[in-house]
Length: 551
Image (cartoon, rainbow, N blue to C red; front, side):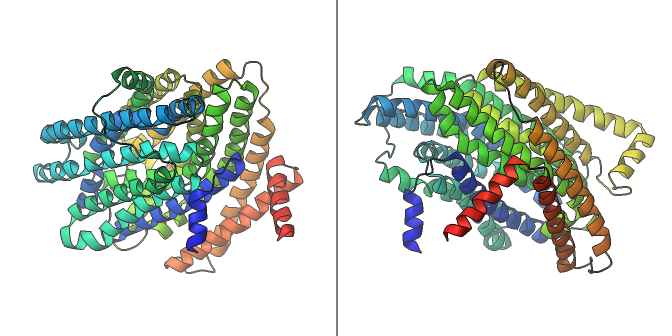
């Protein structure tokens, strides 16, 4: 067993489909541990002041991470490292580059964290203006402790560039699992002793494990970064100038989340937690599908673009795009139909009430509509970064964020001043007479902004890169939509039939109802795709049976 694990540490995955499969499998493990984490948070604490405090401690450190750690992100550093490793056989230039970036990043993050820690009493008022003075006082301490997180995760990003460049996707994919393990340790062992501070310390433990997981790879590659006194500031500024668009792109997302948290803090207690739970559940299909293909494709995109292989560069975008669309549309429909069962099975325990379930289910049902858009954004943005055109994603993302914020403020205003629209909206969302239903308006704005962001980004990408290239994905889209409609219809019918068979007031009853309905619906969808001779499903089945024959 130990030998097999060591082999995975050494193994490089060069095929995109193979790498995406490995990343998807481990991303599934990440999401499973993440769901366990959220189930423990929901059951032990539940949406309310304590969990709102915990979630509100993240935006400021996350914004610092976006502003500072993006300089050492994989998408920025990989092209530099790839070029230096091709130019220098003795790796001297690569080591010089890593040492310079490591020294400036670590020193800069320490300095920024000290300054932000001093300013924290003023900054938290922007994050949670609806909190009481007592909660704000507690939030100051929690946010200061959390400042360790961007430092550790930034260092992990730096060494993760080496991991991905050498295509050690097992190590890269395992790091987030350990991050969740650290948080789970905080929930189970530290929270009963230390309260909400124990939860935050669990996050720091997870960030440390995330970093330490990748150390063996950089040791094996003899690329352990070291502090240096003589810094090549021209090199540092060159990297920073390239990373500025990506920095602001990530910052836009974090600023949007910060503003949404601020809006939610003025709503019913637990609204921040409801929003965060829905976002986490939405990330499951995005991470498994969109992120897996985007991460797997990025090293090849960098290689093909830097070596002038334009056609291979485009192929490395179109193929993952087809796979993302093929998988994400059916999963979106399935998540919408089974939203109540998913939320009840994952979160419906202990302190998590039926009203909480209805709010999270409604929010998740809206958010998953944007799964395909968000997954494609992950791919297209990486394609721009591989091509060195980092400003375009910034402009598009900023436009999407501004659109989100305007929509959120408009929706909240209309919801408050128009009782008729409020009652209609609550009825449509199936949250009538549920306190705190206005948080769904933030979710709706977030989803529409994501879709808008994708549409303008894909339009710009086609004009810049695919003007003379036919993108043959319309057949995949229509076949996926038809199969998805069949999956959704069968899942809905099966839920009604199984409602009278299982006791849906129990965990196992709800689980059996949702699981059986989902499996039957998926099998029906596969049958539809086979009858339509869908290229993706036939290729998958051929690989499966071919592998089975070799066994």
